[in-house]
Length: 377
DNA sequence: TTAGGGCTAGTG
DNA sequence: CACTAGCCCTAA
Image 1 (tube, rainbow, N blue to C red):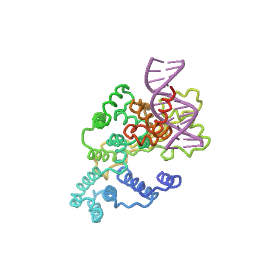
Image 2: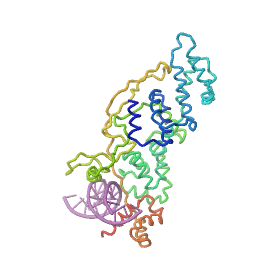
Image 3: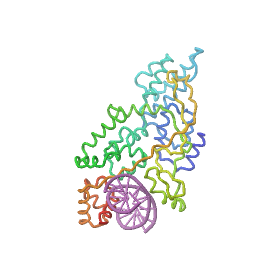
Image 4: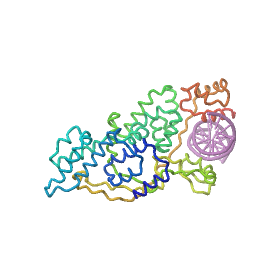
């Protein structure tokens, strides 16, 4: 399966850029649950990666070597395990990864194992995880708050519709709140300065996170990386195949349901196609393979740990997202008219650039649509 | 980037 | 139910 996966990757996907290969490897190598054989398969399928840029990767590789050395039994008292571990630690590159204490405990296998466990636990988060945290995790509100409309669109693609809604909701654009509340908030904060505060409070309240920033994210990620490996049966990335003429027609027919809720599907006889593919949103049809977790495995020394059983289990489809609508303020309407007077109808880009504050959360298409609506009466 | 077609949440 | 405003999608 590993072989198949890597083969798949190398044949059906464009070759990974070195930087991306690095991220993949950095992420996978640092997950202790991923067996070394699997990592080796991955390495074979990726462009060459230099570990030198990432402490996490360096350390993960060193820890894997130590794990391998410590995996044998030392019950026979031959000292074989200890000798292997010493060999590994003799490598200055490995020793450099553990400046603190690990290199000191060279003749106590049990202590060494405990320390290796601790080192795994404290492995810094991968770039993937940090980035995910920035766009959909603890840092999401900041990132989204500072993103312009186009960037938000991209973010939305990445995190998926329901997560995007959740984040926007926390940013104070919650569609479930009464519109006048939204209006009031709008009027009160032309600058949006207090949005951040409120967002942060919301974030902490909703996510149960009271601690601060970077360290928090790190903790979070460190924890996640030791969590179960999930994998859908449909793990191949290109969810949306190259659009052929035939599928285009279908798509057009259904596309507008995409953002709508539980598409009523009236008068359309074909099956409802899912929302735009997102890298982070779960497909309703996805099947999850998951390590079963509920045991006290972490209490055992690493060499006695078993890889948990691989268990197939269905996940329910994600909650159906709702749409956010933002009413145009009077200022925006007036400015739009002024802009059209000044720059001419159709030069939406110019108008947007001319009044960046007013149209910060409006795309040029929004402006075009609004002007069309305004002209209808 | 823009124009235009079309869908739908929200409102009365 | 009808209508409108806001938004999305695609072609050009």
